[in-house]
Length: 353
Image (tube, rainbow, N blue to C red):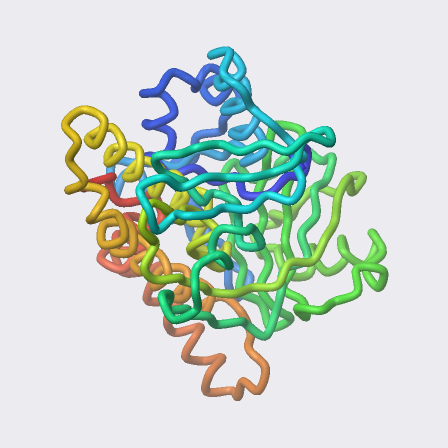
């Protein structure tokens, strides 16, 4: 999983935090700072200068690279880190003595805990361990997915290009000076076998090519997959001594580049609360964990939904819907106020308790 390229846009907050905790050497060396993004429609690219509008920027650095850095930092402490364990179960998280049980290399283990951080993703064990009457689920699935590719081709744009096209959304991104990451709107259950490399490049060129002559460079496709789009929130995010964080608690459409950054914000808040507990035995901040995190989560949900709705084609759309989307895109790219609103959401609001 560490080699699977996924999210790659880090908010200013995330970059600052990684530097603060001392694990930014590779990030500072390999990360690509972007001061803006492009919005493309009607064959024209329009740049939004986020750094000028907000004084903040984003950095392109793959989620898998962040995971490598975190694993290396943990390894350097000499403390244990276990992979591929089996039959993991959490218990007694509604008491003062929760525990995690699992099997590793054929042996049974149990970890006695003060707290359990449920950072185990959307399909993990932590959220399903909560009784259904104790949790409220908000879920919306979108009628499309993204066909994503990783290509061995040097970037032809120094910043991301979001494209609205009659044939569907497309996104041009990158992961390094030699690797590009591109996406096409498709059916959520699209059969990847129906998309040979030539067809993918033809569709990308159609949806991304601009009247100024810009188009993505092509190269060997290293990875390709289809991901469905959904919005999901679980409330609350705390259950006794169990704290959900990241994808275990919320999913956003990737259009707004918020998923990884929300997870980092969750863990930052949780870390502050745990530190306060061990310093003063106070649970004041831990008691506010859900409140603090969900305020940011719902703000990110709104932004991600807005970006998704503005840039994608929906089943059953009529000419009115298309003209409304184009009008919104024209307003966005011509209004300093609208561009500032996008910019401050995209680069991320400062972390706060």
